[in-house]
Image (cartoon, rainbow, N blue to C red; front, side, top):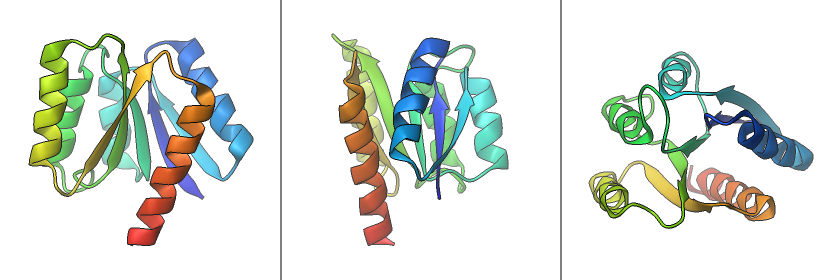
Length: 134
């Protein structure tokens, strides 16, 4: 069973993601409502994929990605980053730079509001690719 971490400050959005992925089945889903609790979970447990909002308290998505890249445990983890449209140019530049620096890890962007079916398909494709590569 693949382990997923959903990091989203809005309970309704976390629930939407969880419910849609549970319908697919085969996922063990853990939730975090902020960057600090997400980082604690990432240090204690292993996850196959993280789905993360950028605007998180008290550690935002940028900060969380930066600490993840320095940790051997999370450096290769694939992360789906959820951004609102239109994205802030500075954030867009940050994520482009992050991907360029991270040949081991992978980041995929999805724009909010997103279609839950698109997210389910994206998660399935990523986890299938990761299984094929390993």
